Amino acid sequence: EADIYQTPRYLVIGTGKKITLECSQTMGHDKMYWYQQDPGMELHLIHYSYGVNSTEKGDLSSESTVSRIRTEHFPLTLESARPSHTSQYLCASSGRGGHQETQYFGPGTRLLVL
Amino acid sequence: AQKVTQAQTEISVVEKEDVTLDCVYETRDTTYYLFWYKQPPSGELVFLIRRNSFDEQNEISGRYSWNFQKSTSSFNFTITASQVVDSAVYFCALSGNTGGFKTIFGAGTRLFVKA
Image 1 (cartoon, each protein chain N blue to C red):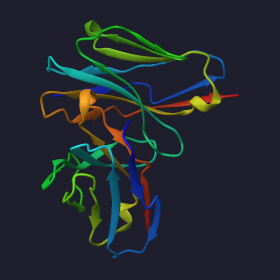
Image 2: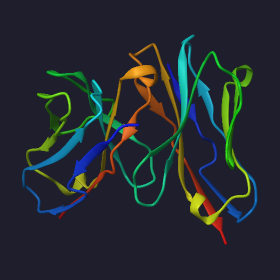
Image 3: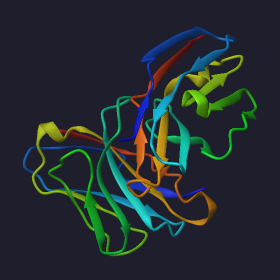
């Protein structure tokens, strides 16, 4: 089972601010993902990475960007937050051993943009 | 194209009732994996089970059981003797070799268990 961490857990911020949501995992997984989800609703994949220096956009267009400089770290950045970015952001990882396809999720970051 | 359908948007039961959450999938892949996740009010998605397309054995874990039927492309989840703590949103998901095993999630079923 993966250990995956997200900070902050909750963030309230004003419009126009730059924010970075942190995601780290300690299991050496090569694949990492960011999902956007309104609580209890569908998950939308916004970014994924299959390894260091590899990032791809997901199925849902997002104004956020990501980087993957280290295997364990996959931060997501919003250059200028807007109220439409208010949502929950879930980070996940997968890719080691016999259960490579199983994604393990962090606790999520709930973002409120005023 | 791959697709996961959870037709039940919300289910409400009384404690100790059995409840089945339906999941129907579509895929052309010969190798694929099916999952169930639980999302309690805290928001974290908790992995419950993974099955691969070559293993149609049903599985039981405590009060939870899963019925995988390739003939009907279904992977249903039953909770026996439901408890209030089972209240959550449950997601069924599919991952196949087409598309590099990206995971496709269903829309989720919200389960309310009343005391």
